[in-house]
Length: 269
Ligand SMILES: Nc1ncnc2c1ncn2[C@@H]1O[C@H](COP(=O)(O)OP(=O)(O)OP(=O)(O)O)[C@@H](O)[C@H]1O
Image (tube, rainbow, N blue to C red; front, side, top):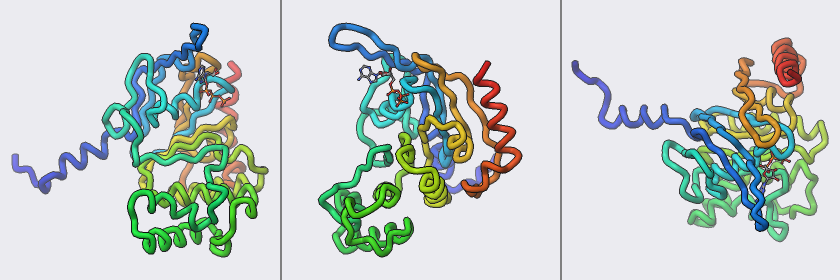
């Protein structure tokens, strides 16, 4: 049979079909200095598709941050394999971006210089890096604050700098560890909306860690629920709500209420 695909199209399609992140039956055990073993995660499997938004929820100490640290290569599984774009993780991967609970801004640099840091580090000429930074500063609504230093900004504004700092590098994978948990409810809702707007259309995959089941349902395509330590995968929930989602409204939608109730009922049993 004649193959009408252009040269290389098959491999490109295969690459897109490969999950962005894959955990295959992963367990991780920490051994402390006095020889005590702590099993942080047990028999965990997860595949995150390209462009998918996955949330991981679970009680404190169940291994959520540990999963992210294995994606970055900071921790190695004791058993099993973690793959990024189809290849086992070997070290720091420039395709991965992070946003954590603590601000990762440099206090001695103004907003422009903070946001331009990534492209400059990757070798972009200064003029180009500053123009890119300005564009991202505008996108996160900080157009008038480019010359401000982090201590002159509110917590929400610093978080916006963090998002601009991360998105400017166009990560194919974005890892977020309770990024908004230190913010008040209203700022948190605004930041969730901004995150969805920035992420929409990038084609990147997100792994978002939170204690807050409602936040997970509102944001994600799928929610992975872990059990208490040693963390094991309790269940995966498909969040079949259409996008775009507006965070201040999504919580009142009948499907959201139904899903929340279903998941809570499930978790109680
Ligand atoms: N370097 C380490 N050495 C020993 N034990 C560790 C180490 N790092 C984490 N742990 C333990 O592994 C378990 C999982 O930790 P992890 O930080 O992944 O949990 P978490 O689900 O992210 O918790 P939280 O919701 O409180 O942030 C915890 O019991 C923790 O104490």
